[in-house]
Length: 593
Image (cartoon, rainbow, N blue to C red):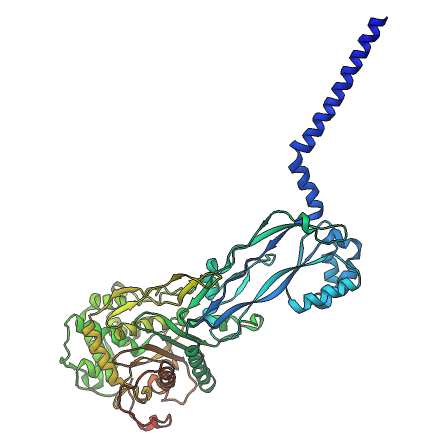
């Protein structure tokens, strides 16, 4: 019996040992093997993963003036597990601050299983502070506030088409992204990378800082410095706005660029819109017409045929082209000049803007060679400017031309270009024959203001020799002298070189619109050593019949912009002073286009 009792005791001890071993193994498994999983479950009951938003980079002009900034705000997040059955009371207090109807806010707050419910991503700082105090006073919890920012544009509508704006990719998205302008094209540099922080709350909803978990700091966005000079932008904006109000055109466009570097110093469009009030903007107002509109350039295009014919030695500086007394029958149609001319040199053809002289030079060059120069000047392809939405224009190859095309294209018809292409084409004449890639970004800087990249001038190609560009440029100064088509473009104390353009407005249904014109003037100054090129383009000005010409409408606007630009750049006068020309004088002066 004694042996049997011992045996039973031994078995019992073994069984007890096995049970405790099993419990110990289970405990070890739970505390060690399953530690991460159960820690995560436990943490999820009391903690949330809070995004630390990266600060979006600033956009500035070339002198450091801030064009797009960030205004402090608060992201309001609701933790439904802390609100529980008090959604109605919280909503009643918060609704006036958040601008959300009480019933709608109550429904959004009554989600006990949603611990990170973003109620609004950007509540103004002062409203957030007042809301916090009001909730604390009434002993209500469940709403939490995290630092954020709102994109703001100090200059409102100025430069709006270049800067662009931001929006959500989807209505449910919390993060805004650039959807137009520089905000879009430089999104990767501006946005940065968000960080995060795991935080825990006690039962009262207070953060337990000592239990703050994993944290990753955000990488803030880089600052983008534009080539734009806001002083010149303000000059252009003011003159374009005055013209838009007085002439009541469909659209108005202005561009100022440095012909030697390709840097865009100012770009403006009318109609325009306020970047801080996007809800009031119409789609037609938000279009950057400087790179998105296709227009027939009119006589500004005559620099192409003159340059090409001279460079190919089809004509020389002394060659005289017979201009048929103002009526040229070719291909069964009559091409007319504004006045009847006889023999004219290339210089005279540009000064008087002879359609017939230009057409005959193109015919002497031939279809293929003339087309080659149209493309060499950059027409028919995108300029490559760092702005979204640019179009290439429309230049048909010779295989699609009829017999009349070459004569019409020589005078700026049967071809569609963008305003920026016109500016870069005239820059070829101003800078010694080089086609430059237009630059709108000057440099990129980190959050500490240290430059990390600078954009350099980029030559696309040498279009014509410097000697040819110099001769054409000299001829274009005659356009602004007495007897030229743009006497109203003159600037006191400076030689101005440029070209007028008057083109009947194209009807989208085919043909042209009777009595409607797109008029322009593009020129550079000082003519001897150009510091800037400026284009003014006015579409369908409401002006008396017979006065809607580039030399009468666009040239005076150019003159005012150029005079103020010269003063700002502190340019030294290069020509004898002359008396200002009154706007009312042109009606008695012979003007040809």
